Structure formats: structure tokens, C-alpha cells
Amino acid sequence: MFRTLQNPTDARQQQLVSQLGVRTGTENVVRAQADAGYFAAIGKFHPKRSVGIGHRGLSLLKALEETGLKAASVCCATHWDKPLSSPDENVRREGVEGLLQALKDAQRYGASSVLLVPGRVTKQISYDDCWKRSIPEIRKAIPTAEKVGVKIAIENVWNEFITKVDQATAYLDAIDSPMVGWHFDIGNVVRFSPPETWIPVLGKRILKLHVKEWGKLKPNNGFGVRFFEGDNHWPAIMKALDDVGYQGWGITEQPGEQSKDADLMKDLSARFDKILAS
Image (tube, rainbow, N blue to C red):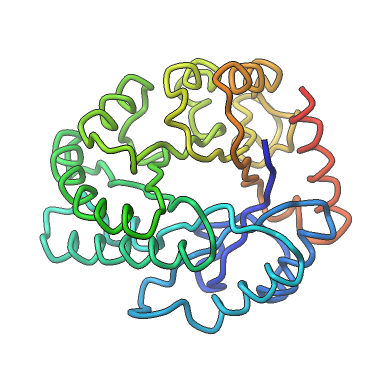
């Protein structure tokens, strides 16, 4: 598995899409990751940009070139505020436009997939609504994904949608495209079931990983715990990944307090190495 630390290119939404603690500009953040031993960065699409990747994107490209880091993935910023599950057709259209631009940006960065949260279940939007509305919208983006050679990776998050692995595989079956797979967030599923039980079922459909700790009963529980101080069974998780032959990126998504300076970033990197050796 290749490892990377998640890094956005839009500082305005860093707290939404990244837990990286360094706040010194795109180029410096990427260099800090390289110095700490990471191999890649995460690009992020700006939701209001209509063409191109803009100044921050160019800064990221420059930093990647200078450090030798790769772009592991791009996160589509519109998927939460402009969900593909919205009852409003115009909102869904904006969400699809955001996904299309993210796919194009990912091609420019050299990333092989775009992370997508497909929708949200709320008091106004049922699970069935989310399912039926989001699938046709995702299908609209498949021709662009094929054209640019970038896959769409559905992420499991706490959106009350897809909380069981059989639901995940059924969702991918319904979309029915080799251009759509799964961005598996290890920490997010601990709340529902052990991550190591998802991996054999998703198998080769796992395109990317979020390597994240979760602690149910620990001090400062939830996502605030450090690697190996939560409830993740890393040896079992890594064995499951080895068994399915996963060879892609592992992207850390730990809290910013765990990577806010060079020493802490190196500590996080060392803990990440320990996971990979599990």
C-alpha cells in the first residue's frame, strides 16, 4: 500500500475535507508531507470554479513536481452542499457539474479517482430517495470519467446512507460501471461493524483507502484518538487488505492536532508505517 496525508488546495474548506494541521499554504504543506516521508497529496476541487484548476491548483502542481509526490485522489467539494440526493433538480445539476469538474481536475493533477459522497439521508430525504436520485446523477458523469480516465470512488461516511457492506455492493451493482468503485473509509465503518468484514466483500472494488482510527470507549473517544489508541484491529484489517490484493493508496485522515508541526507529522508517519507493517 502507498501512503499519503490528505491535503486540500482550498484553505476555506480545510476543516471539511482535511484533518491536516499545517496551515502554511499549499506548496509548504506538500513539502512538509514529503519531508515527513509521505508519498502523495490530495487535491481538492473548488466548487465555484468553472474552468481550470486556478492558482491554488497550479501551486499544488508545482509542489508535486518539485517534491516528487503524487496526487493520490481529488475530493469533489460540491457533494455535501449540492448532494445528488436533493429533491431539487437544480441542486442535483450543480452537484453533477461539480463532479464533472473534479474529474477533469483529477486528470490534470494525475490522480486516478475522485472521492464522492453520493448523497445524504435526512428528515426530508429517505434512504430510498437517496438511492433512486443519486444513481442516475452519477451515471451522467460516467462518460466524462471514461474520457479523462479517472474513476469515481464512493465514500462511506456518516450520512445515514449505506451502513452495511451488502448495501455498498448493491449500490455499485445498480450503477453498473467499471468506472465507479469504492473509497473505503476504515474509521467510518467501525461505528457499524468491523472494517475487516467489509474488505473481503468489496474486494477489488476498493479504489482508495482512508486510513483512520476510531475509539468507542477510549478517553477523547471518536476520531480524536491516535493510531493504535482506538478500537481498530489493524492486523486484521491489513490481513484482509492483503488477502484481496489491495495495492493502492492509503490516505490518513487523522485530526489536525496530530500533524500540526513537523515533529507531529513525523510521529503520525511513523504510526502509519507501523500500521503498514501490521
